[in-house]
Every structure is written in structure tokens, then in C-alpha cells.
Length: 470
Image 1 (cartoon, rainbow, N blue to C red):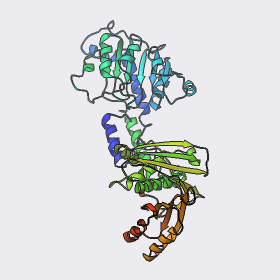
Image 2 (image 1 turned 90 degrees about the horizontal axis):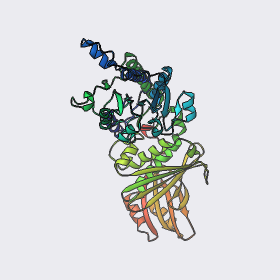
Image 3 (image 1 turned 120 degrees about the vertical axis):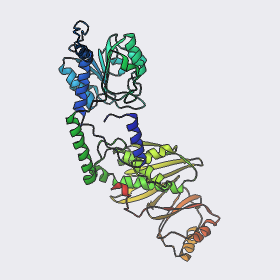
Image 4 (image 1 turned 30 degrees about the vertical axis):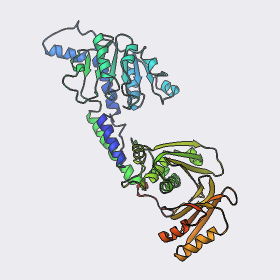
């Protein structure tokens, strides 16, 4: 997919609505690579200008002396699907290919017949032709500017059949007009279509096409088939492939992560109801088994839980993190495969303008979720249903006092756990209740002189997953 600024804006809008956007990256790969090679040849042999000359009744053979490709060096920035296919075809034309991609190992590049460079600056001085095949991101916007063009050898030529804006158009115009860059071939532009007065449209040493990279009958059919198969796999199997706004995941992986996703979301819901003040940051620490897995979905599930309680809109693992960022909430994660007291642990530290709240959970067996830490206190509580959480001074008779009040109001205590650091000091207690206590009961409990704070947290019943999980 070739991403324009409007396309990226559409992705963002879909993400905010919680809609998965999937790409069809393979369908137009060959057509785009072939178009790049066609532009390379057209530019090196002046084919558009020569064609126009003959049609005008002229025969100017000496005017259109071109450049042979064999023996020349092609620099390829971005060695994804299209970049690799361009490199393969260039090698077949007896060109030397030098490439750079930050996520491709030099050994893999060598297997593809590409000499790997450590950075863009290594490619620019040695290439006769330069082609870019990267996504358009804040990091690649204007990646090839005046400095980069000036570092190329005099007479080099550049191509862009990827995304408008990767090559700075103003800098390219100046380099072409000065003669330092001998020619350019562009299939994409910052503004599409370019305005009639765009200066690059007036230069004779530029080959221009109207975003034709994927414009073949075969590519369109392949993209349609691939898109249909992506939808079939998603609807029938729950498989998410080539998503541009969430982690790719298949049904098997999702089921394996089910308990972790559930645990993280419940920790998010817990924090949303415990925290006082505006949230500025959430820090997730993964330890043990969970740290060995992909945690992106788990982090997204925590963010969904943190926001769904507070926002009156659809929140899921697709849009949760972007909704958090829009509200100034920074979400970071750290992982360590080293086990501590538990085989796996997810700890969430949420910072507000008042304090930092800590909650940690783990898995017992293959189905039980447990809350094992609140603040500095360690405990063992069920992480579902209605929970009464209160901090207090650890004195005799307090639990009996609360039990008496709840009994009077017909509220049954299903489970109770207390965490403390020392006898007689500050402590925290979690009561799992069968029903929500009335305000009168809470008022009586809150009025006890040894109780410092109290809140009621409502979590889904055990085993209940959100609709977005599927």
C-alpha cells in the first residue's frame, strides 16, 4: 500500500473508532517493482523526451545520448518487499546493488545479492542511481534533502515510486537545476495531483507518472483477492494479518494470550476506579513467562481497561493506546524474563497528579487470576466481581466491625485478604462481595477512625471477556 497523508489520516480516524485497518502488501509488489525499473530505464535513456521529439517530426539522435545501466551502482533505501524485488531486477541488468534497511541483517542482504550499507550516508556517495522504498513516517519525511543530494556524486539520478515527501521536492528541484543531479523519475508527490505550476513539471530532465506503481490489471486483481482472503481469515478464524494499526495476531496466539489479556484489562479497570486525579503515565512491568511473549496486545488490553471505565465511547485494543496518547497519558512497558516470586507477573504503576498507584497480578494454574500487590502491600485476592478495597490501621476487631455492618445490610463477604508490612501498622484489605454494598453501609465503614481510605471496584465476573476479544 502506498500511503499518502490523507491515507494516514484515514488510518488514524479508523483507529480512534476501534476499527482494524489491514494492508494488502503483497498484491502490488511486482507491479510497483516493474514500474520502478521502467522509470529507471526511461530516465537513463530519455525515452519520454525522445518519444515527444519523434512525434513532433524531429530526428534528434545526438540529443538523446543516454546512460547504460550495466556496470552502474543502484542504491536502494528500504529493503522491504518492493525494495527487494527492485534489487533483484537491477542485478539481472548487471547493476551493482547497495542497499540499506535498519531491520535487515547484512547476512540476509548478502544472500539477496545486495551489498549492505550501515546507513544512508554510505550509499549516497557511491551510487549512480538512488531509489527509495520506505514508508512515509515522521522519520522518513524529507529523508533525502539538500544535504543528502549534495553528497551524491555529480550526475547521479534519483527515483521515487514509494511515497511523496520522502525526497524533498524543493531540494530536488534545486539539485536538478544546478546540474548536480542529472535526472529524476517520480511516480508520487507530496500533493497529488501536483498543481499545474509545480516547478518539477517544467524541468526537462524529470520523468513523471501519475502514481502508476500498482496500476496493472494483475496488481488490482491480486490486491482484491488478498483483501478478500484477509477478511475471510479475520471473520472465520479471528486472524489479523498486515494490520497497520495493531499487532498482527492469529487465533492460536490470541487464545494463548487470553489469560494475560484478561489480567491486564482487569488491572486497567482496577486502576481506573482506584485512581484519584488526572492520569499522566502508566508503566507496565512484565516478569517471568509473559516477558517471553509479545506484550503489545497485553499492553493494549491494559490501556483499554484503563480508559473504558472513564470514556463514554467504544474502547478496545485497537484504539486504546491512541486514545490514551490523545489524552496525554504516556504508556511504557518493561520486560524481564527472570522470574520473581511468581512464574509470571504483570505490574502496573499509574501516576496521577496526586500520587502513583501500584497493582500487580498473576496467574494461578491455567484459569485463575489473582491480585497479589496493591501499593507496597502483598496479598492474594480474586480479581473479579465487586471488590471493597480499604486502607486501615491494623488493629483487632476491625474486620468483625465491617462484617457486622455488612451483615446488617445483607451484603455477603465471599472472600477477604489483608496485606500488611508489620503487625499493628498500616495495612490494606480487599473484600470480594456477592453484591454491591449500599451507601449507608459504606458510610458506616468509612466513619471508623482506623480506616484511612475506601473504594468500591466493579470488575467483570470471572472468565468474562470483552466483546472485542472475539
